[in-house]
Length: 113
Length: 115
Image (cartoon, rainbow over all chains, first blue to last red; front, top):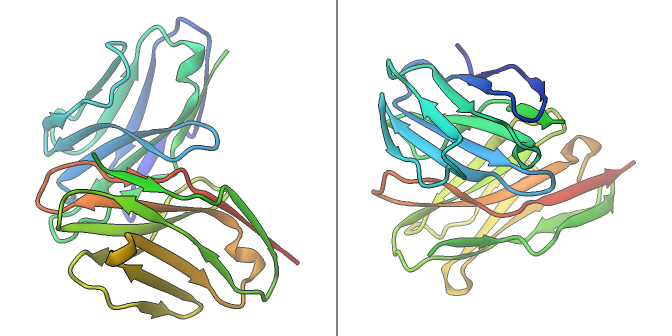
């Protein structure tokens, strides 16, 4: 596609529910990042993939957070047993080999009630 | 450790005024990239510019200009003759070269352009 696509745009989850957030990167982009953006804050790194390999997951806040990119294209960020502090916008970005700038999707706004 | 500081949390200016957004970064690495991104109300982060650490030339693109000074570790962004459509949150960011690594963002500056 023309840009990074994320779905759903909005998700309301009851505390304790599992959620899955999807990211479709720009076609051909090797690198994929997930960021978490709390209200009024800058994006905070969660995890990074190069193709299907998860090279850095140091930003995942707990073992309830899990990300995968099994075929090196689409990625899913899963949050198990959601808690209120998980409420945030989750941003996905992809990056080509030719330049360091990352291109972001519109994000998924997760609200845990 | 790397860090990006945007000291201005929120700025309001009247349309057609010039405005400068400040960015100060910290890193011990000598080769790195600096970025500015714009986040309009729709939420998507829009890439504006990238500078390399070894290229201190200032850059102008239409009403936008960037002033990179390694001596003060600053990468400031100026909008000339601001317009209402410039209203957004602006983020400065840092990425270390030759490392498969994350981009580090500042906390952002919310810019309001008043008609």
